[in-house]
Length: 188
Image 1 (cartoon, rainbow, N blue to C red):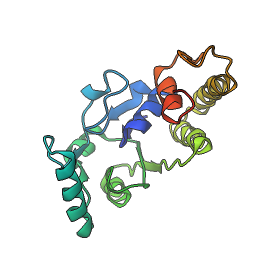
Image 2 (tube, rainbow, N blue to C red):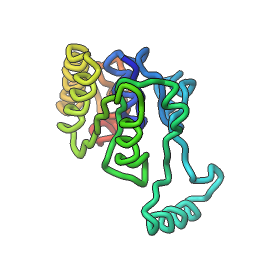
Image 3 (cartoon, rainbow, N blue to C red):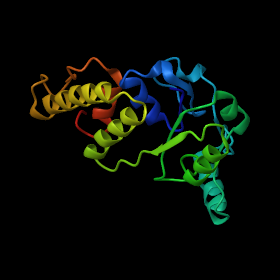
């Protein structure tokens, strides 16, 4: 399977379930796990890299008035990669390529690749996103193993079985899992 990830968290999920070798393209923002930044970038941004936060705020507000996205697909790159699956999101058109653009692009690509949306708003939704990706990629068992490991590590952290509050570590050997658990506030 040839997978294109259109958001960094999807790239991490794909890698976490053991499908790193199937990713053929990522966003211009993907930088984890190490090495994915070397893959072809299939997105671009209109936000200047040297803009201050105030300038970005002004630019985004002005752009939203026109209902045009800040991020776009690099169609020539996408076409050359011939993906079977594109993983995207529809929660926020400000932070990523608009879902409508992704779906339209998929329809114009040879083979009409599948498009799945990840829209988590809570911990349970993240588990469902992992299932969506693993199912779409034909790696259900790998996805379920990762979910089991992830839940176990999260429960250990929540129950305090991982040691003192300071320096708690997940028993999961996966670095992105520890970062995610930290990001959702389970680990300080």
